Length: 528
Image (cartoon, rainbow, N blue to C red; front, side, top):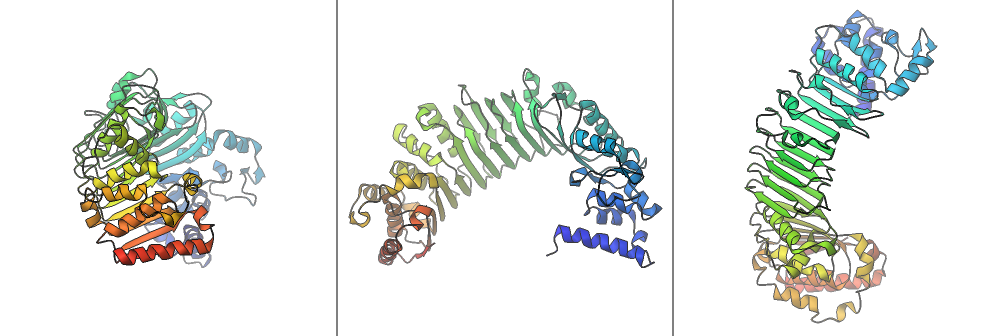
């Protein structure tokens, strides 16, 4: 397969070769075709090609995809855009190194060069994409975006660093051509204009991504993405919104919502009739009481809920189209009370229509604590086919596992990822491994066989990563082999500590598991 780098070299070679052979057939191609070819080249190479002829200078002045993030060296000045680079690839003017232009590029992140490129564009040449990363002032940023808007820019992807916070560039709000807008700021961030101004603009925007937004003392922005605002918005990404405590999202045609690093969030209310993908990571205030999440998504197909503080209340309704769900909570287990335990139960029960469920670290531990303190059972996952669990598996987590197995009556694939940080502790319990004829953990699993009958009658594939020879692992393996009547394959991938153990000891364990399997079922056992 041809790599992007090889493709760039080949395209440049073919273009230069067409001139050197005296027969320039490439230049006769339509503008749209040549623009498509140039799209695969870095912008400095496109600028360099403008020296070939007036035809290629026109192509450069009308080129619609301006990605300045591909510039890794200081670019030429405007007078050099069609006279080529010098041998050292530094800014030069009339063949001499220009310290002033070099300093401008370094301090302003190439803003001068971008200005010059925009100023030389032909009047009726539209910009399809403008992408740049820069260290510049707010006024300079506004000027660049105004220039792009004048050329009917369709996609703006901007990452800026300033000495102080700045205001959202209003010139982009009323653009009729803008379809995709990404604005990322490094510390300290930027402020949004009043909700009324934002809601009256962006009538044709399909995708919006905002990163490092300052929202303190701006309550009107909490319901910015509701009602008739952003009528065509399909994708929304909010990252690092400082001061955001309440967020209500109900855009009518929104299909994807990504929310990350909103640590002060207390209330999240999402209602999306067409929402298909939802990702929420590292959000919610862990020091405030009364936190709440509410999600209504009849079209939701995938949800990622990772490293979020447990809210006091959870309400997930009408997620009947859900296919994939990944869930992970951040919590100190000793701080868990009955309210948060019930909230976890309500959250997971709201995912009961999912076909695939992944539970990250602490979820199994929380369910075990839930089972012990609250005695709450999960709503059955009647459509679940694949269940993947990440856990520091030990005897204290067995109630949580049992709860999940009982609630997964139609699951055919079970994946258990045992985290490494618990393996040292687990190794201490490996005493007289094969001397138990009826250990406490084995008796517990046997007591659950009737309640798990449907789960055991559907389970076909089991994968255990981080398998160790301790009681918890072996007891579960023996139970599944004994009662999994349709079990076809079991993969046991040893933990690092287990791999380093005496090979003779490991072979003995493999032999005994294989023997137990032959006596119980016809499952294929694979050790790795």
